[in-house]
Length: 175
Image (cartoon, rainbow, N blue to C red; front, side, top):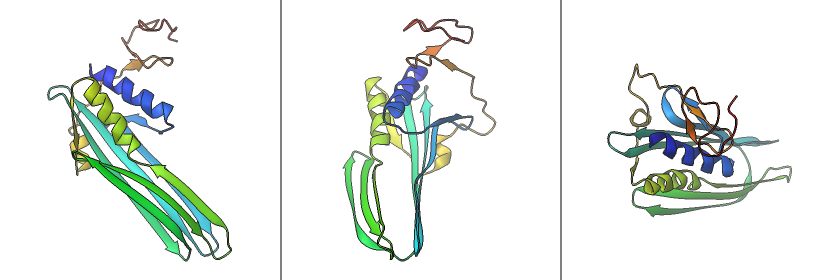
């Protein structure tokens, strides 16, 4: 069941253009720069990081998120951020237009709430719990843990046995 939930989350991320990785420290991780803007009088960078760990014994998905915004220099403009909360999950939308002293406009819009929402929906679909954690270590494998190497269908995301030649769900040939 864990692999089915991971496939649902990955499919949602792929459909929404969310870049994710599979690493040995957690089931799914996201480490991306959302914004890297520079103008003659400064710059602004926004980095986003998330770790998602599925615990089969407790039927719980643990998710850690962090957004780091770094800016320097001078600009003027407008920005708006809206927050809403469902249970312990915070949904955040950011929209900003900044102008450098050269008059050039820098506009960006992010819906950071779409990422935990996709994970929370996958948990609910399989009757699992969803928990936001404040420490990245709580969304990572214990030290020394080696995750099993798994195969997924490149067509539909279905989890496969390591020796599979065809996907049992869609029939896609596995090379």
